[in-house]
Image (cartoon, rainbow, N blue to C red):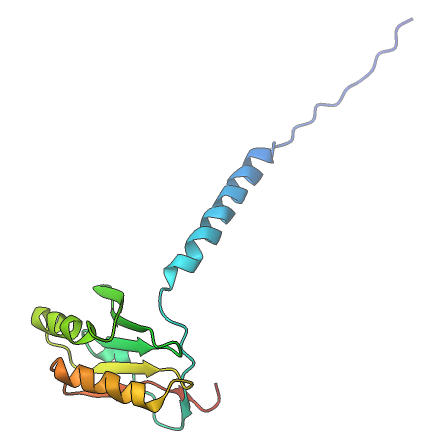
Length: 141
């Protein structure tokens, strides 16, 4: 006699394609995330000054200088580029020709020599900048 075996139907979702898609998405995010922030690593000095909201200005311009002396000029989505010290004045002048800027903010690494920050500010003055602010971190950060 033959045995009748009752096989149950298994109704499962095959999750292997979903895992493949998730791994591909993970790789895409791992590759693109470091590219989102492009700037210089600047170790800002601390102070007890009041915080300024730079979003209130239409086109804030930020000039960063890190401990290695690299200079980066950032203007929202319009401009984000590393420039040399000798090209900084020309870069500032060309940005000023396109649109008047309320203020230029300088981010100077706390390990950089004071002379380099002052030289950067004097170059900004040569480029026509009259209103310069210095960016620092609050004491508790």
